[in-house]
Length: 240
Image (cartoon, rainbow, N blue to C red; front, side, top):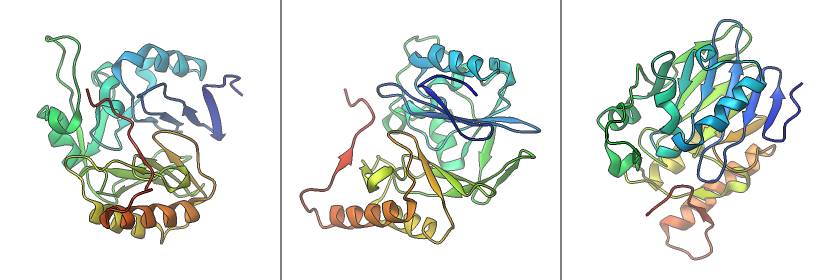
């Protein structure tokens, strides 16, 4: 067991690598066949992510697949450190924006004008599955926050990695430039039909009350459509 307040092993060989400031959390699944990292966070926090990987016994090249839950900079920024060794995977609507450098949507601002362009090797579709042996991950297309948003469902433990689609308490993230409140409500409604024990979001705390939080998220989104005051919306990206 790793003793570090920035690393928590919630399930056997599933690690929560906590993000810092604007950076998303990353989740590591150590599989029997392949090791998967869900979201890489911002590039400036890569050294912190690398140290966390080393603490759980993995070098950079031991990560076989990086899955991005969507195309925003705080989830994809450190991809460039993995893309020469690992498969980078994202929904096809996210992949187009990442690879074509659509910075209006991704808000990605490289610090070096000669920086290598970000790559996506595997363009995902709904119901795509990763069989890791000990775990099986299913891609669930959940447009709303962005058009390319996905959640990742693990069948055995019934956990859902949600990116910025659902947060603990049903708090809404802002709806991105390619997103839609209507699509968001539909996506959450479909997720609510699944048996889910815990939600692992891209920011904030883990949710152990997924059914309650999804109901709150839908209510908050409907209130947002009516332009009501008092809807709690969390902004995790830098707008400057």
